[in-house]
Image (tube, rainbow, N blue to C red; front, side, top):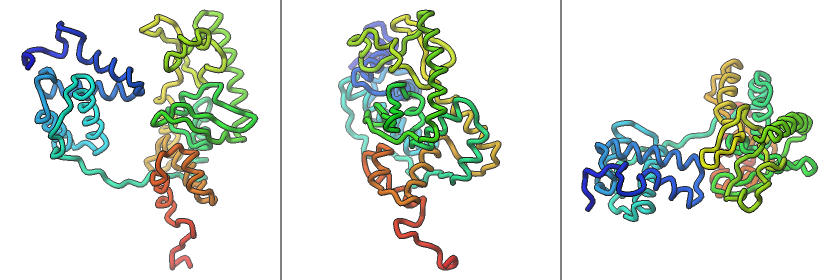
Length: 329
């Protein structure tokens, strides 16, 4: 067994967290998963006095997960994420799959219904938003997009003739098609004209490339500069890629829309704890209200299991037959 005094920053080989990052990227996990897993592994190491995970085992993992549930009172999903990160660390990075995690104290998973806004409530929020954030919120509500799916749209993913949006590499790394609201076509075209002018200026300044997934930039060297690959909602500032040293733009950060939406909800006087994701929930619920088939809604939302989509029948609280209260009847 390795010396317990060996730290995660040991000079005997690559640093542990760098090995974790390399393993995650080799499996093509999302950058958000990488950030979360590295954070949980770091917290696990500090919880056990900076001992190297090679000197720890299932008992210490159980102790940490139980502490999260009983000492910190985290949610079940948070605890499960921490558990997944540590299982990945031992099984993939350290090549030591763990046994004996079946009896860990688990945080209780409450059954929650999604927060859904009515059409009037959506209007009250939307009129208090402006510019790019209003356009992005309109797409989330009108197309059922997730927040990150909206932020990472590329120009080539918009089909104005067929009124479709191709969502690439969505949750679970699945592609899908959803509707492009006709009401947003003119605004999107005007927005893209401004983005194109900005892109042309960036190209002239040798800063007009974007990041491409899955080493596509190696296969298609000119693709990062092509108009079709550009972000629909680019960031306002450039950044320098740490690996290549190339100056480019990222997509608009999710927090920009989140802050704008939260401010609009507060100004509208709504008491519901609505977030950007509530627009996606509202999209699904209102399609169900209009009589669309649950399987159609499932495909538009990109749910792998129809049971996930069925939650909106509980939100609607009337199923397919339109049950009404005896008092109202």
